[in-house]
Image 1 (cartoon, one colour):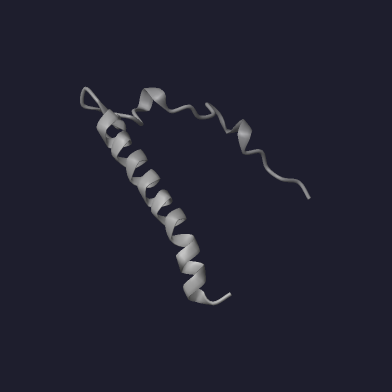
Image 2: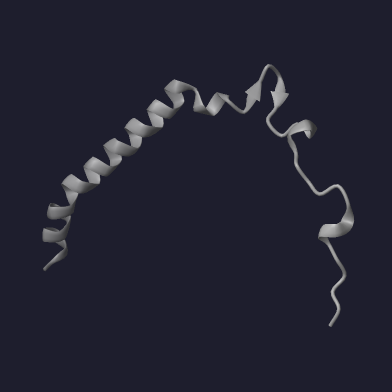
Length: 64
């Protein structure tokens, strides 16, 4: 199979993939998925939302 035949067969699938990607991306932007990082001027990673261990118990010394 030469390369010309491969590209002739793959072209419809490449167009379908490009159109599906653009449709999904434009829908994501239209719904506002990119604008959800800020809510009323707050950052998404505010200190109240971070969950972390409250002591050093999670980092025990290793005994070999």
